[in-house]
Image (cartoon, rainbow, N blue to C red; front, top):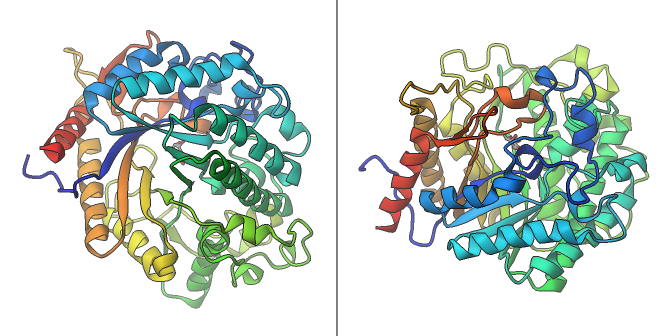
Length: 459
Ligand code: FCB
């Protein structure tokens, strides 16, 4: 027990999931198609052609999952709402069966003594909105505000913590520039327009959440700790661009009410002369939040890659990342991500140094690792590497708090093994194993470890 990092009273321990990754039931009860249905059903897009059609079948098995959460002892559960269950086409009529599903989920969480934390958008845009331009167009941001108002009206009294967007970097840049996420576009300017409209959508959603009087509202970002490969001028300049496209593009408008000073050197003519920004946008985007959600997994080593910078689509997102020679001496997870807990501390302390009092209290809304788990003959899963990852990252988080960062909560990613986007079911992030043939759930050692940590914290 003594190796559990100690957290202050009231600190929130939670677990997280996302709709398309666990729900399944994609054609049930009036749910409309999302961009992830389209993308995963397009040959060649996902590993093994995996789709979220069934996933963990959480849509039907949520009572079992809530029971597992209750036994785990978490204070809070972070889930996401599939917009196309609420409005099949992303606008217009509300689908009562979709609302009812989330209402039942929320009620069963509350009965189990677990605080619901709802993410409004974890990447599953209604396909009908993508057909009209997706996040490239402002209309999508406006529709997002309307959908948020519907959810806040129906669940605002029962859900205390609301997250507008999950990792807009992935939506904008993996979705519209790298093309490795839905909708799979490879554009330069389109991705920058998407980034801006996601922020505008966040602003409209904040307005709607405030109007409904919810207790806490914020956004979740996947901020990166970008580490130069060498101290060469070229690599250091590449880090400035990487910081701009990963971090400052979000944190500057959200926390400082301005666009990044380094955006021109990062995107050149792709950002200058753009026509998607309007007067008033920064005010809408920068309204105060009750918390900032941060998802953290690993640092990224950055080296200049001139050949990539020549391609406008790649240039806006992947220009200068490289994975080779990536922390050669440290262990890699099944994602080939280096395990470097100190960089988690650094990310948070640097953020605090940069924004000072403008940084709201932080919730770590995701942290965890994919490992090559296997099940023993007796049905146990001894995922010692995941336990070690969680232990060292919680200690690194504690170190950031000791250094003055106000962190209020931590959500492990993920409650269940699930559909890991383009990588399909091969990557297992769960603290609970899911057998994809039988859909049986089996708590892993990491689940027991987290359970004990939470119990020790309470005691
Ligand atoms: C994050 C996503 C989450 C999951 C983890 C591993 O980028 O928010 O859905 O895929 O990575």
